[in-house]
Amino acid sequence: MKANIVINKITQLIPVDEIKGPRRGIEMKNIRKIEDGIIAIYNNKIIYVGSGELPDHIQTDNDTIFIDGSGKTVLPGFVDAHTHLVHGGSRENELKMKLEGMSYMEILKSGGGILSSVKATKKATEEELAEKAMKVLDRMLKMGTTTVEAKSGYGLDVESEIKQLKVANKLNDVHPVDIVSTFLGAHAVPNEYKDDVDGFVEVVINDMIPKVSEQKLATFCDVFCEEGVFNIEQSKKILEAGKEHGLTPKIHADELYPMGGAQLSAQVGALTADHLAAAEEEGLLAMQREGVIANLLPGTSFNLNVGKYACGRQMIDMGLPVALSTDYNPGSCPTENIQLIMYLASLKYKMTAEEVISAVTINGASALGLQEKIGSLETDKNADIVILDVPNIDYILYHFGINHVDTVIKNGKIVVSDRKLIKE
Ligand code: NIG
Ligand code: FE
Image (cartoon, rainbow, N blue to C red; front, side, top):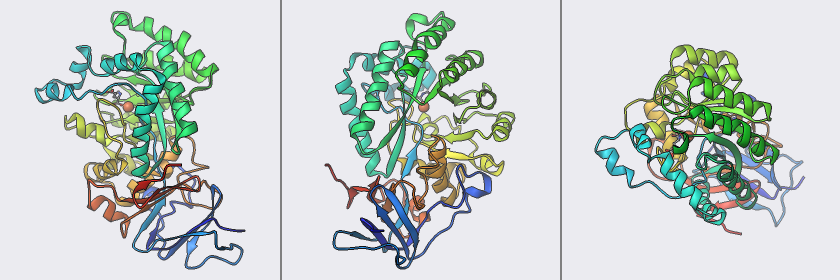
């Protein structure tokens, strides 16, 4: 077999292999490290992972691209399994309100927050939304993210929700980053339904979900289950309706108040429960029993700045599979920087570098149901690979706030080289 690309002499190669994802509990830190590593790629697949030289059955010729991995760390491409990628406008105007002491929820209740992004998203054309999201994807890719989840939820009516999802699906076709879509019609209560939340839930269930499912625009169905937004009963109804239409449940659970979102995730068989900063032990135990992945978003806790972080350390010690994502969105967490999220998780949750790497690779892939294809460096898996200009994984977390990625290979193609995007 002939290799198109070979990365050799890798100082630290971390394949995150040997265990099918998600990794839970102690498995998150028990990942092997290969010195003098080597990886070979043919077309879009990995054909060899090892150390030293290539075995005889893999040939190279003048067309093979060799990348020198000395002094570098090589990891699976990062998977950002919770983002609000497509939206119009921005909310820097809220910064002042925040500094003056207004809470995230107070801003939302006064018609700002998510609702102001809804206004801007409704106004924007598909082209405008795509152009804005494209820049976001470029930044993500340069940071080493090769697969993202993208939620709707800034439309809040059938037409605008579908518009957002269509944009995400189109971007998936044209941008190297792979995008998995989630329908989040129940992201906020639109003003016209302020006094009739159940009425809006009916619209989500009867109008939005069937159309989204019919047009195959999403894989997952999510809901913002939070005090003053959608309660447990409404969230359950929506997620069950999603399931009936083939959409796997995910939940924005116990982000600000302990609502019982974690228990609900276990009850409805959600793949992930996300946020969990206010989750209580009972809910986490239920998640652990049902194998729900805790998808934690420390950038949001950091940026909301109310001092409440998910108990990531305890979750891992309880045996939960933990993933980490940016929650990239125009309000609570406007950052594409997954490496900053990794740093915050280490600092605030007390996760080791090994646990952090597991969380953003195989567990991120598992949080999207893609653990068979991506999230680890193994023969026959997609060649989604990041090369970081650091000698070991601890260094990524130690030297914080900068981008360590030198090269990104996506589906076997070099898409970032020498820190620059390669545009086709
Ligand atoms: O995950 N909490 C709800 N949704 C997003 C924030 C969206 C926004 O503020 O625009 C989140 O934090
Ligand atoms: Fe979110």
